[in-house]
Image (cartoon, rainbow, N blue to C red; front, side):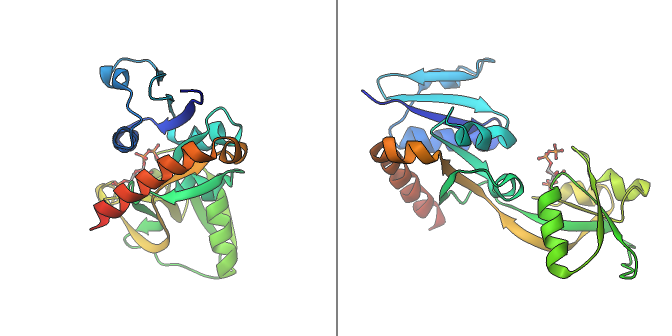
Length: 213
Ligand code: PRP
């Protein structure tokens, strides 16, 4: 095998699903299932090298060419707008970006709305499109606490099952955008490893299509 493909996988349950899809596409790497704390795995026979990276970092590896391809959530792509090609919607890791608030929340449009979020750009763009003045409070996690403690009026966050909101007496007010996992590629790799990337994309697209039926 002359060319190796470098794949950044998001660490966690989604990444395991994604690996299973790559395996099915013929890019198996049995050592990855040994479940140790190693982060890089390769199978020279199959011409593939995998890295487990933090889900929000996948696009950075791909943008800078440390990985040729990877899988990232649409939330991360919208928020950081990395210079990559988004080549396929894998239709997994589905959730939505939503505005949520305490159940008794009543919006006063005359006041600047305080919004806590990890997704500042998505938040700013969304409220700009509504012409609404906001004060963005950027947090790094446990966003749900902000309205409870009066730090913010609402939050903008990922909602999957809705359990986290429910457990914290919050509810969705608006859905901003549906989210799912996307196959992304480095721009130069798309030229120099075009055939390999096309092969992978085709198989993943077939698997995605079959799963939809
Ligand atoms: C996300 C999000 C919510 C939760 C929603 O957090 O921020 O807290 O998932 O999922 P649910 O609707 O199924 O309850 P994540 O676990 O990705 O990590 P974070 O706490 O670092 O944001």
